[in-house]
Every structure is written in structure tokens, then in C-alpha cells.
Image (tube, rainbow, N blue to C red; front, side, top):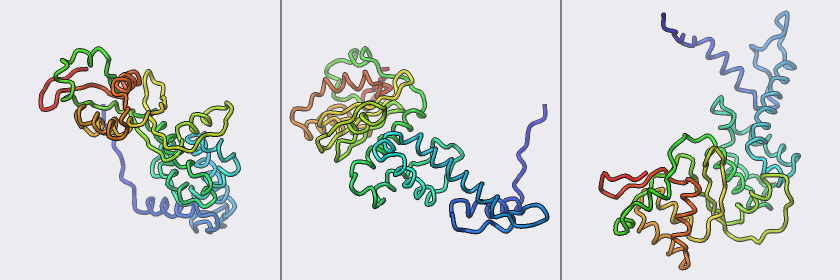
Length: 270
């Protein structure tokens, strides 16, 4: 059976694509000269319709990725903010679910959102939620695997994170605000305090869990490849009342790690 071949893009085709797309996200720019209507007339109207459709589709992609942010701000505010983001940030991938990775940083700079200081961190949680959802599959560490490790070896264990695991820290109650606004349930006042969250995917369902004080530095150390004893010290350094055994049980239940192994050895537990 003959092999399919990919033909190279000719220079004139590449130039056409470049000129056609250059002004798509610039609302006041004229249509490229190569866009024409019947009888060779230039067609600003046709190009503007296409330009508007592209902008709307990118805004809709942001609506789908950041539903909690939109609920906090309201649809009109969100769409106005999203339109400014779209104009500054053309998509770099044909996969729309990958669009908006820079949206949290844009919110940090967006002057009209300055009175909502937690908004960008809620957006970061939603980005992490999407990344976790689309992450690769992998095994989940079982409680039995951890229990099989001799007690004298526990401190030397290193943990391999599941591909879908994310940890996020905020100076604001972003996890609580995210949870209240991700659905359609009631919302209420929240005390402004720092919060950390664990985002994982178990049984094809993404979950966002609140981490107790000390939990984020502990898990981040494990994700960075530090052994359990070193990571535990990070947790107790952040919080003298850090519940090590409770959090280890929680992270196993969440499917945060794939397997464990002894440092400087070939022994692996899964």
C-alpha cells in the first residue's frame, strides 16, 4: 500500500496565510488586499464577518474553560475582559481547550479587575482543572503499596506524581471561591485568608481539594522528588500541627501519586 506523503507549503501559500491571519484580531485593521469579492472587488465586509466569528469562538472557548471566573464577574464583564485578552493573544494551537493559559496573568494586569484580587487565582485553579482533565493516564498509588514498605524505610521513600496532579497556592481563599462558583449553588461571604489546593483526577473525574496548612510545601517537595522525611520537614516547618499521616492518606485517596520507590535503590512499590 503506498505511503501518504505530506506536500510542503509553497511560499505563496504561506504568504497568503500570514497576510490573511495578521489582522484577524485587530478590529480596526483593513481587510488584507488579497481578500476579494466577485469581480475583483476588495471585501472588507466579508473579512469583518470572519474576523468577528474568530473572536467570538475564542471568547466562547474562554467561557468554557473559566466558568467560575465568569460567574464571579458576570457574563458582560467577562466577555469584555475576554475580548481584550483575545486581541492580545492569538491562539498558538488548533486545540481550543489549550487556549487561555495566559488568562490568569492577563487578569492580574486588567485594571477593571483590580478590586477582585482573588480572581486570577480562581482562573489558575480552572487552568489546573483543565490541565488535569487532559493529562495522560497513569497508575494510582494504593494504600496497600505504602503499607508494604518496612517502617525503617519510610523516610527514604520518594513519590512519583500522577500526571494529572497539580498543587496551587493562593494568598486569598481561591479554593473556597472556586468551589462556590464552579456550579450554580448559592454563594456567600468568605473570610480573606490564604488557601492551598490539590487538583487531581481519579476515575476520570477531576477533583479540587482544600489543603491544610503545611500541605502545599509537603506535596510540592514530594513532587520535586524529595524523600518523604525531607518533605515532612517542610510541612512541619510551615505548620507545627501538620497532620502528616492524615495528608498521606488523603493524597492516596485522591490518586495524587503513581508509585513510590526507595531513594538510591531500584526497589519500587506500586
